View 1 (cartoon, rainbow, N blue to C red):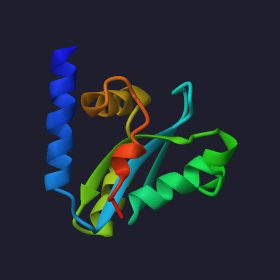
View 2: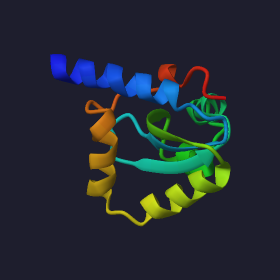
View 3: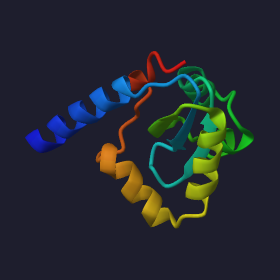
View 4: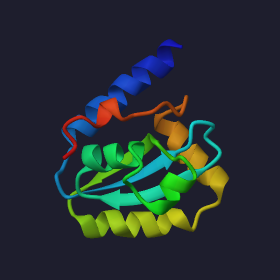
Length: 117
């Protein structure tokens, strides 16, 4: 338990240090974590709020993908788009490994997205 908490703290610090303003690649998930949505945006906090409130994509609205479970920061939006295209070709199991490598419990990271705008 301590290792997970320490890892989460270290990861959060790395994200804060590396927080560029260019673009974000992210995963939203439904409450049961059975459906994932991969997206790209330039304001993570705002886009997460939109998904939570049914104003995001039609897919997230239809499948109730309201929880931000993973995100990466990029210096420019083009790099975020390239990452999205790469990850979208992956098998679901690989995506789960990526998400759980930084968010083992797949908790909603919406509150951690504060300031990512």
